[in-house]
Amino acid sequence: MNDRNQIFSEKLRAIRTSKKISQDKLAVATKIDRSYVGRIDRGEVNITLDILYKIAIALECEPADFLPNLEQLKETEIE
Image (cartoon, rainbow, N blue to C red; front, side, top):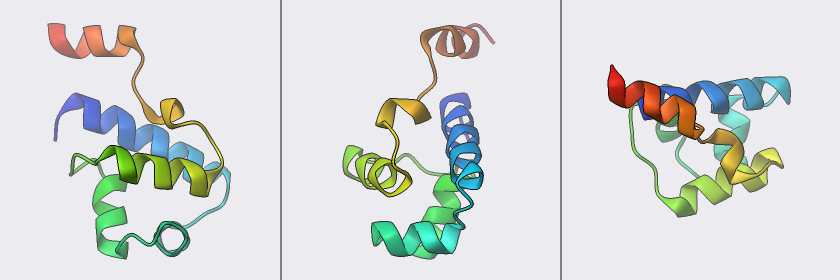
């Protein structure tokens, strides 16, 4: 798992849990396989823009809310 995926998955999990939405509910809302949602949530896969937008719509937030900011990216490139 790369650092960008880890940051993405941490943000996704924080938003999802703050809205009290389980992985199962997210899978149903986005029509994405439950096991794939779990892999996204753990940062194990790179997702497409289509999936990013499906998740953002289901969680009622902006796609950018999941993405690492430039400072975080710079830090991961240095390490």
